[in-house]
Image 1: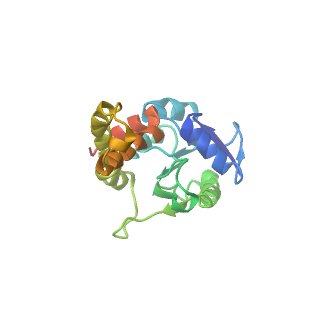
Image 2: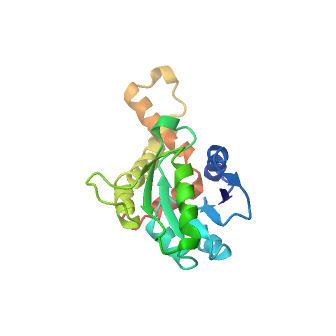
Image 3: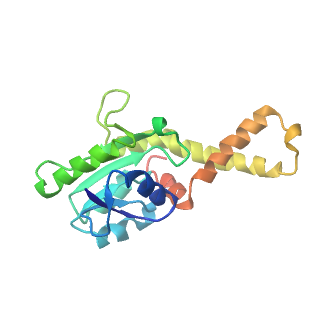
Length: 201
């Protein structure tokens, strides 16, 4: 199956690396992954109208609303992993799939999810057994993903103030806080922008 990945930042590049053994990456593909910040979703969706668009944004409701203006063939999922995540710890929340009556693209979606399932475990239901939706995803991420980013940003102020202290003089509690703050290093600005656009925060 051919897919195109729009977005050559750290996550788009990472997706291309892990997906290229399972898909042919081609600019003329009918199925397109939008690996861009939320602020670029409207523009990229408009440029790829009437294609099968795959939303991998950290915030699902606003990004899905942007895409649905330009195509009904939308697959929405949020990979909960990055380049440093061990392969056996990769999980992906699936929040929206194409209805079967869009015959032109429903087969593309099936092939895409089958291939993506080779690099990540796909989660379709929440801890109560309810199917994920863009809204339920964003509610969950407001409590977890957004909270972690906000806390790390606040702690960074204290970590930066201690840059001049030798490591052997730092207590373990502070070292753990510093390691947590460093998780922000794995998140490019576009990812943080998308996380902070969560309507439930």
